[in-house]
Length: 492
Image (tube, rainbow, N blue to C red; front, side, top):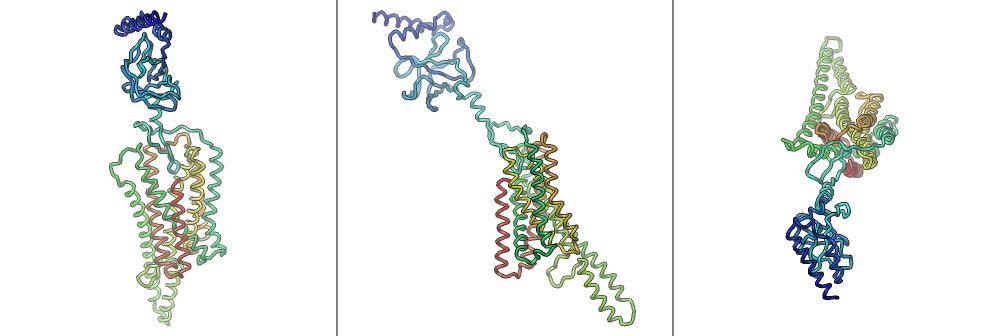
């Protein structure tokens, strides 16, 4: 019987070969003859499961002559046929995977290839990509289109993935009650930071010459300088580099706006100083006319007038300087503080908005960072406000200045809650607005932090002639402020 079985098998293979050479006659060939014949002689048949990108009908089998570049993914062997990748699920994990299969042909509506042992292996083109999860088609395109999205100060930026960049708003479910509750936490924290120096100096708990006040002041100076460069300038540069805005015609946009903010701050200080000097000269002219009026004891009257004029200048914040160094008058100091507060307010309202619109996955982290940011920035502003003499600002005025800072970030958060479902951080107009305000604020804070705080304290103030211990402690506080706020810049 064995010779007869072999003869039947040879006839079956011959019939199938003829059917393959004439595709139009494939429909008349019974697809079950070859497997039955193979099993009757005890031949081992290996089934190869192939995943095509598109499900194909039996009458439209792919034209494959060979599969090569076979490689393993886990326990499944994958081979390439042109640009298509096929999963070979027939061999088990204990069998050695082949590097290629050749002599591919069709039996009926099914595709077979020949392995190294000369046996046919079956290619099931009916399998879909979802069954195996690995393909060069849509599955791979989907994997390649994954985007890495992250936040800069609450505004989402996405990189990677497909070449097509979407700048539409990302729909999210926001925890609004949490945001409303944390609004009041920000309010309290900002208030503590800004009012602590004001009230402690007002009630003489800590004097302006106390080492604790010096530490707070220099720590705040470091905070302001770091905020200008690490937070605001860097973030403005990231905003103007956003791919949704496109390529800028002028590469120095961020630096130009930063320079504009710095110049505006200088201009405000300069015009304020000129105004104070003009008023001083006008008052001096009036005093000279009064002193020149003839009367008995004119020398005594002139001497008295000169003394009273100096006292008036000192009490009203008018300049009275001797030598090359010009000491800032109380009015000039008030202008400087208002300049500082303006720069802080510009970006504090943005902080409030961007905090609220941040996704829930990043919201808590950003909230903690901004909480410390607002407290430290409040300390910086509060120490400057506390140093103002009574002539320049009364206690109620100081409290108003401090209260404005404490309220501005919660106001920004309230605005953010109102536009929560429509805010798009990748909209070009939003990018330009945020980037411009950040760069302007950076310029303002850079001028105030370096010129009005750092240089004035260390080059023209009390620290110029301070002792070694006092100077070392102040310098350490200054560096701590810069370093700490720079570290927070990783998240905000």
